[in-house]
Length: 104
Image 1 (cartoon, helix red, strand yellow):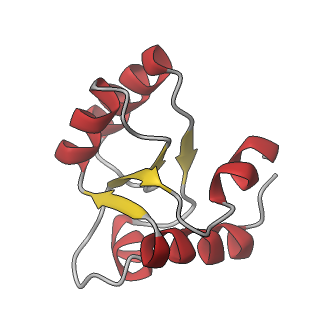
Image 2: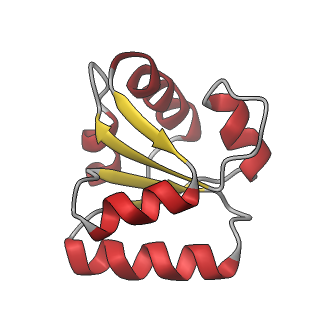
């Protein structure tokens, strides 16, 4: 199991050095086109968002990480003053987030 602290550190590094897209609509589109390497869903993401993204991610073979915090906490982690129910990592940059999620 990935520790929350390690995941948060890796996510912040990915946001700083890689290519991360915020928002459930944009995340769903990237997953549909198979362009995301990892999807992160907030614990309180709307059920239809979770269902759609998880379904498309499964079809595309994209891992989904269920973040243990709320959408407001995920938004704060991403350095944004708004809630983020889902985000897609296109390029992890200098982060080891993909390895962390594979281990967990």
